[in-house]
Image (cartoon, rainbow over all chains, first blue to last red; front, side, top):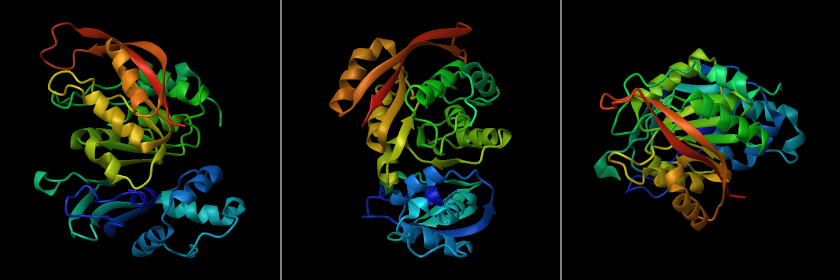
Length: 124
Length: 210
């Protein structure tokens, strides 16, 4: 599970949950891989990203490094920034662990890189 | 990035492993390589809906559409499916093809619009056609897809249901366009299929959101 995906996931389908975001990551195995950098794509994704959530997740995984705490003005033309964003969004993956709903504390297991967001009948 | 030809794409997609043990209740059929290649190639060359785009493969199964998207330069692909076994096969396929920008998530399609905080640009799907025990399931997939896309939804539906599908697509605020009529040759996947393969006429449709 890439942090780009984690940035989008909510537990809002649970009937007791209002927002269900952000999900807290408890990772056991983390992998770093190389993914082709596409400046234009990253630049278009930036407005959709909850930057605070991304930083928090990166920090929890020990991969915050020198990622800026906020998105700089003129980020579209800041290749250095886009490369750092790309690395955290696409190159750091949670392989095994849990995602925890901040309201209900319900755990969603991540196995072999795939988060299981399926709910039981009594939770919907 | 070199533009891959349709035939070349189809050749590559023939290597994608299919469901080991398809489940009838989920109506699991693999998307045939020639159909997948036609879909992805059209999305890329006619509509600029693949290269550098954020894409959701709704009901990704073994991942043949997701892999096709990546081969033609998608920015990122999210594959969503309810079935653990399908996702396992999909994961194996991604590893075999050395693909690094497809992420997978296990969820029901019905839950997808609440699951994801933001829309993607393009949704692609080969939905269950809504036979057997799942009548109208393809329309549920379509409705969810429309909720999750900012540019377009691409889907396959039985030609015999075309009028109904187009009308529904319009009522959900899209501009539907039938791009092609395709012959979907389904090999005898399930034990109860008597013939060795069955031909179904399907429409490949683009639902324009914006």
